[in-house]
Image (cartoon, rainbow over the protein chains, first blue to last red):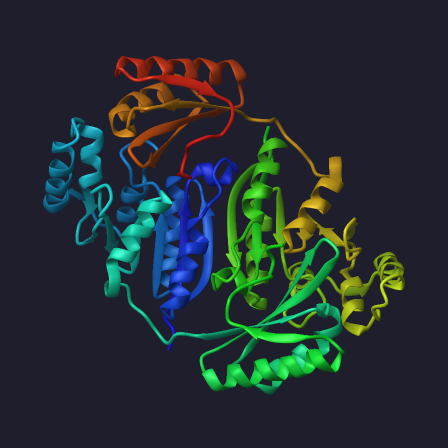
Amino acid sequence: MQPTAAIIIIGDEILSGRTADKNINWLASVLYERGIRLTEARVIGDNEKRIIETVQTLSSANDMVFTSGGIGPTHDDITTSCIARAFGVNVIRHPEADQRLIDHYAGTGLEYNKARQKMADIPEGAELIDNPVSAAPGFILKNVYVLPGVPSILQAMVENMGDRLPGGTKAHRLTVQTDIGEGSLAEGLARVEAEFKGVSVGSYPWFKPGTYGTALVVTGLEKNLVESAAMALVALVESFGGKGFIDEKVIGGNTP
Amino acid sequence: MQPTAAIIIIGDEILSGRTADKNINWLASVLYERGIRLTEARVIGDNEKRIIETVQTLSSANDMVFTSGGIGPTHDDITTSCIARAFGVNVIRHPEADQRLIDHYAGTGLEYNKARQKMADIPEGAELIDNPVSAAPGFILKNVYVLPGVPSILQAMVENMGDRLPGGTKAHRLTVQTDIGEGSLAEGLARVEAEFKGVSVGSYPWFKPGTYGTALVVTGLEKNLVESAAMALVALVESFGGKGFIDEKVIGGNTP
C-alpha cells in the first residue's frame, strides 16, 4: 500500500521566474524513498482565495499534503491564516511556539516584535513541526504539513521529523541505460510493460553533443518483477545491436 | 494589460523525484519577460484522465496554457491524444509533420518506424510549432501550446517561436538588497506596499554561514512607482541602521 500525497509551493517569486523552486524535487525524492506516491505538485501565488481552494481540493484528494512557503513574519506570508480558513478553524497564539521564539530571539539582539510574534500564530488544533534552524515552527493540521519556503530550513525540518512522517511500501526502481534511440525501442517497451503486470516502464531520451541514448526506468512494488522486466529490457536493447546495462544510480534522463 | 498563463508539466519521472523539472522556471522567466502573468504551474503524471481534466480546467481559466512532456514515440507519451480528447477533436497524421520527420530520419540511418510516425500525429485543426533540434513538432490547439519535456529542445522551440508567442505589458522589477532581517522590516514593508498602489513588495530572507539578509522585490506595471517604492524601501532599511541598495540583478533570495 502506498499512501498518496500532493505538494503545494506557495510564492509569487516562483511564478515570476525570479526564484527557481528546489522543494518539489527534494520532497518528491523523500516521499518516493518513504513509499508515498506523489500524485501532483502545484505552484501558486500569494493569493488567499487560490491558497484556500488548492488546500481544500488537494487535501480531500490525497492522504497528505505538503505546503512550502508563506509562513514568515511579513505581509505576504499568508499561508497560516489560509490553512486555518480552509478547515474553518481559528488561529491562536501558540504558547509553545511563542516560548521557542522568545528563547531564540533572546540571544540574537533582534527584537521579538509584533511581526515576528506572527510566526507563533498557529491554527487551533495543529501540532507543531520543530524547526532546528531558526525556531519558527511549521505545523500539521488535519492531513496538511505546513513548511517554510527556504530550502535549507524545509529540509532540516523534514529530516528532523523522522518517523512522524508516515510511510508506505517502498517502490523498486531500476534504470537500464542504452545507446539506442527510444523510437527504435518503443514497440518493445510497450510489450515489456504489458508482460510484467504492475511494473511501469518510462522512457527518457537524452542528448549530448555527438551522442544520444535512452534511459529506461522500470518501477514497481515487487522487486523480482522489476528485476525481470529490467533484464527483458536489456535483451530488447541487445536485439537492436545496442548495449544495455542496469544502473541503480540515476544518470542520463532529461538532464543533458 | 497582462494576459494570463498556466504551465502543465507532464511526467511520472518528475513526481517520483528521479528527474528535477527545469521547465517551470525557464518558462516562467520567458513569460515574465514577455509581460504574461503566470497564475499557476502543475506537475502531473502520465495519466490520461488527469491530463484531460487539468488541460480543460487551466485552459478555461487562463488566456494560454503551456504543456511540457509526453509527445515522444513511446507508450508513455500520451499527451497528444489527451489534448485532442480534452477539446473533442480527432488526431490525424499531419502531412507536413510527417514530411519533416521523413526528411529528418532519411539522414540518420534510423528507421522511420510506426512508433516514430506517432510523432506526426497531431490534433485536427492544430498549428505546428517547429522543432529546430529533432524535427518532431509541437503544436498549438485552441489556447494550448504543446511542447516536449527535454529542456534543451523545449527551449529551442520556444525561442524559435519569436513573436508567435503573444505578449503583454512587461512588469518592472527591482530588488533591494539588505543586511536587515525581514522580521524587523515587516511592518514597514506592508506600509510601503499600501502606499504605492499597484506595486507588490515581496520579502525573501536568505541565510549563509555567518550572515543573513533579506531581498526585497518590488514589482509593478508602472516604472516610476516601482522606482519610488524601491527608494522608500532603502530609506526603511537605513532607518534600522542597515545598508540597502537597489540591484537589478537577481541575487540572494531563496537560494543560499
